[in-house]
Image (cartoon, rainbow, N blue to C red):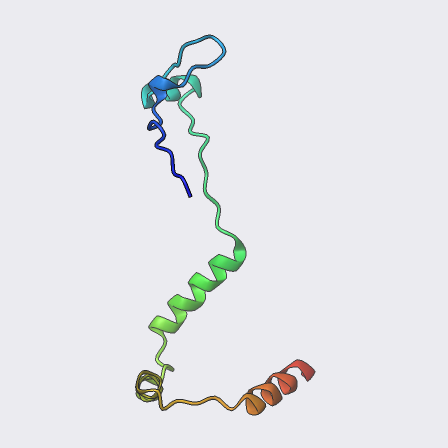
Length: 97
């Protein structure tokens, strides 16, 4: 495999149809958009639900920390085993509900 060195990208090296590159700084961008930013971020309702569930889990008193620590220890030591037949049976039971 032959890898060729490519010159690094810079805005100075890029030329548009007019042969010049215009940089727009944040002040110019604000002036162009009338002071209104057009950038926006929206999180999906699924993600918002996950965030809410995590908050509830972290603040809830119903987390059995001793049980969690027990299983964490088993997983880390390699002692925890999963019976695939039991998992499949449980999944089928849940699917039938």
